[in-house]
Length: 508
Image (tube, rainbow, N blue to C red; front, side, top):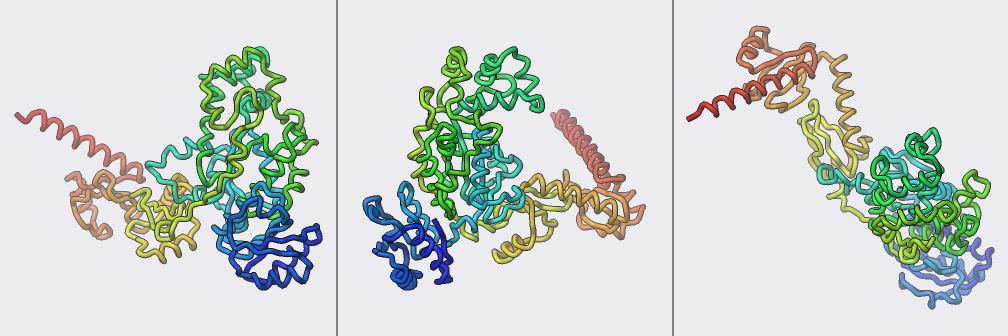
């Protein structure tokens, strides 16, 4: 597969010449005619025999005698539909670069631990995709959900969505790949890794006297790690997201790892078509499974048959098999029965309209004089009293400020900023508004809390006598730090609650 820039008509000449050099002669031209005239002239010039089909969707019978499909133009959705129709076809493809091209998007990677993550990372490298930071992703790269590396458990990542909606984060509006594997082989791979002294679980697993006992614990454990069902179920929710492409280890490993070379090439081809990635699936496949790696023999499909005994199979069979069914595996089958259906499942990446994507959302209020606002999935500390009034202002603010990938990181910045400001800045200013009915301010190097019921105050104009008078009325507290002031305010709040309780109890 190859791509051309539709705004530069001559950019398709080299891909066509390369396809001709590889033996392509019969061409189907489809898609909107953005470059139709230029393409037709080039096909005649190079000696191709061509037919036209303006429909974005076609069937295998339509391309029986076709060597090359050229998509002349169209928007991202249209080109993606045409590329999707090429899954399972043995044809070359030339397509225009659109907003769906891999250079315009970030691809996210999630995986069940020990499911073959590094093989997918190797494939990304062969495809020319570099990794970008999970906290500052870039188009044309791959990345991972923030803070999880590759192994982001679906349920845990989404656990706080009710309190901190995540739907605008880039992960949920980008293509993602989820790597899964036969859980029976995962157990054996886990044992190879977990029993090593540098792993936290080694002290637990090595407590058991032999490999069979350790395997049994990996299957049934309900104290330290959870059973294999528990561990796998943390991740398999990703199988149901329509912006996620599930890919099994068994598909990618090829015959050198106990799989099938045809399936390997077909699965790589489907990834290329869904992600708009140039290259030859056969060439990628040749370099993907590293026979010289230290784990080559241990990565073969079906290795659990060499390691399990009757007891381990019996323990596994006693587990509820829902996790196996979701992944498409059965105990007597090495390969997922869902591979074909998932291969042909369309990739659907949602697009959020600008007015919804960039509308500021208040995520946290009143932290040391700041509010934390979420815009397009990133978090920005903004001084209280400042506001973003329009869509254009929100977009400009987003583009001009880095922001943070999580609320926690934005909060940490605010606290660090407040500490630095407290150490070096002696200017007056509101630091925290509305803490248990008090405003906390810094004035002339000191910290104060003023009861909001007092109303507007010229803090800078208050004398020591004024502050003493307010303190006597329990309308002002002071301290050497913001923590001291908070503690004094809490004391007043407790005393007030106790007084109210006594008054209530004494009321006839």
